[in-house]
Length: 472
Image 1 (tube, rainbow, N blue to C red):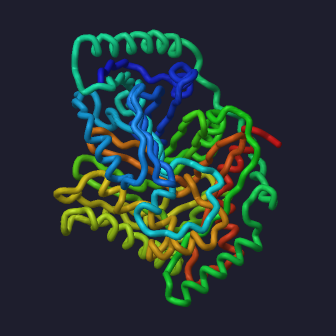
Image 2 (spheres, rainbow, N blue to C red):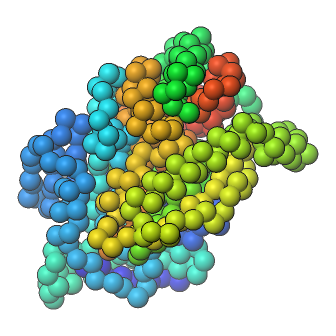
Image 3 (cartoon, rainbow, N blue to C red):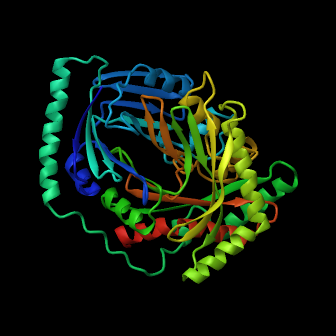
């Protein structure tokens, strides 16, 4: 049951985060330049936690349920099905539900993948928190919606008054925030990005290139057409993770940015890629395939764009992965509804240029959000084709479990809607260490040395944010 209050102003999201999330778990979700909505929230009214060994914990207030052995998608369906969400005329997007992550290891509950990599980070497979309070920033209408949620389906006078009191308290705090100066943006040096010495990476260039060569052997043997291989960087990190997010969003603003501080770990994401959006019965996914390093001028950028778009290898790889996403959406869509409404557009980011397409469908009868997540997870652009065999080869070749990398971050609403990114350009901060991971798509004519360099290019923004936040 949401209780909503609307303000005719837009506070600075970081000042807002500082006010709301002094001690509680908190989050920031931003849609980037041109996006309409951003969200800031805190507290834990409910939590859904699912681990790699199949154990789970579901918390509602002080009550907890735990167990093992159930299908995670059925558990999610049961959990979200217990709570109704009354619609509110002021809210058009996320109006209540779970905020959090789906790690790459959820793929183990979609396909039978051998257990070969070391799970050194021990991150939950699913971790969703229903906040006690959150704020929606509507950038188009220049309005702020304060939203308090009851942890009960009952709509009574006592719970209503409690929620109104929460709104009163936050509104007073916001008055102070709006009168004070907003956070200054961090000062970012324009020097070279952080280096990639062996002590920072889980694979040296030679080791990565050997893995690429093995992957190419599998391709020539007919096992698959394409596979994504990655390298992980790590370094000690003792600063507040929100400062890392502030640096990354300035260096590499993107459409699907996120910050999660769940206390035992934090997530910092500036992802350019949408895994899945469900809005009513409408489905969409936005695959990225094809990358070039940014040029030093507009003229150089244009030359790189023309070369990328005209490259037959890149075009063939992109088309193959768009077809994979069409097939994934088709598994849960009405017959004939899946179509590509944007093909091979160019998007520019701080360090790279990408080719992007958009695939849409209409959710079929008897299907829901959790069927859609199962159908598309994990994204084909960051695994390969065929997807199941690509994941087996990733498991064989990469030294560590991916954890959050190439999983998803976002929200799942009680109303059945959802929006999830693909967790690329994403850092994990856990136990005093920050982790950043990036990869490259390997096809038959890939050059191992070039693929390692492409992985480094994709990691540059994250590594630069780490250097700026906490210099060695």
